[in-house]
Image 1 (cartoon, rainbow, N blue to C red):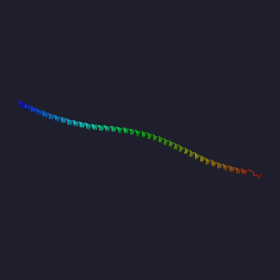
Image 2 (image 1 turned 90 degrees about the vertical axis):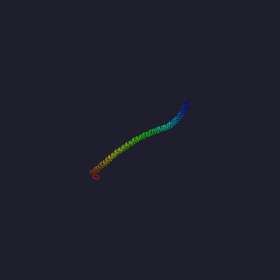
Image 3 (image 1 turned 120 degrees about the horizontal axis):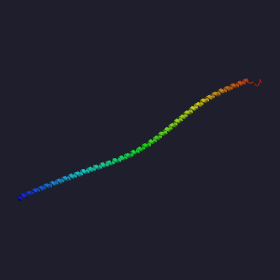
Image 4 (image 1 turned 180 degrees about the horizontal axis):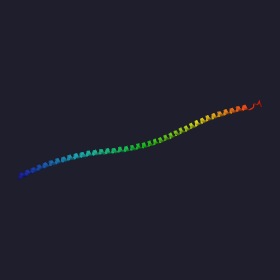
Length: 149
């Protein structure tokens, strides 16, 4: 009976040893797996932080782009207003030039008419002077001379 108990005790000791080894191996495996998971989590955290930084940078760039876009839009509106003002000034200057050309054209026509009228009046004057001379000559020929009287 002792021998049976001794054998049983040895078996129990062996079972416990095996169980302890198994537990140690399991603990080791769990520890290794926990370390692996911790490593993966730290890699995921690093990737998340990297993406968070990239997103923040993208947002800053977008805000900067929006500010630049607003500034360029404002400059475009200002330049467009200046161009419209310049265009209005150019149109007004063109109207003044056209008006001056028209006035000059009218003045030129009036001058031509005046010159034609002056030429016509000179012709009438010549004709009147010629008639006056003819009448004077006739009067002289009709009037008695002082010797005849």
